[in-house]
Length: 311
Image: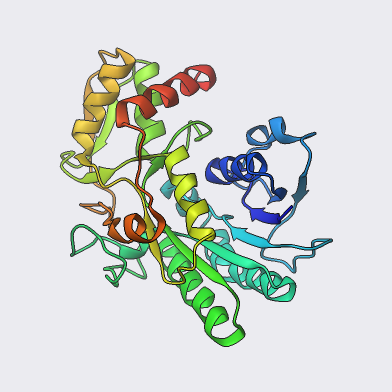
């Protein structure tokens, strides 16, 4: 039975990863300090064979008893509202946290996977975004704390691979949605769904022509697991290439929730990407992976979840 450490394990993606690993017969050490994670996301896993939890800040020296086969570093604020409120913590978990988790993987001879992001491409000048695109990032803008933390994390991961021989994997995650997203996450899916359920005006920034590509969480987690089990060292995009404008997306949310609320337009935030669409050719060829859950099906499940938590 293989054993995995998952940092940020009580977060949206981390909790789904913990679940998948347990379902596939692995032991899981879930680590989180609850800066943005939520104990409710993993409380159903307590008592399951092979699951243990450690409350800890991964920017400090990490000690985990026993053997480790995999280290997956998912700890990080990941939404604009979080990293704008917690810029220093975001930079620290991307730099110090990556360093500490890589050091642990090196010590235990464990395979390492870093959760990177489509934000490494910044406001892209290439469309769709392919892994060999170096990006268009403003390093000193308000979003730079997240973008550059992840770019540094990728560089550190490759340095440990090249210099120390650590088995490493880099996943670039595109927009993902599903159960356990926070209501006040600040990202487009929870914002629009919670507004629609409360029959409040749906907030769309700019004129809504900016595009996004939304991947349901179960598809994403499957892709991440396949990447971890593959031999691919270079960064790999995992996301849904089905692209739509934010305004179109707001209309879909209105339809699925039955909301009659109006759409309210607000100024576009600084450095907000105008386009976002993954090129997943590599994932298809190397991992045999592509998303399967249609948008309306995934959104219906997500809306049902939000009905239970939106007050």
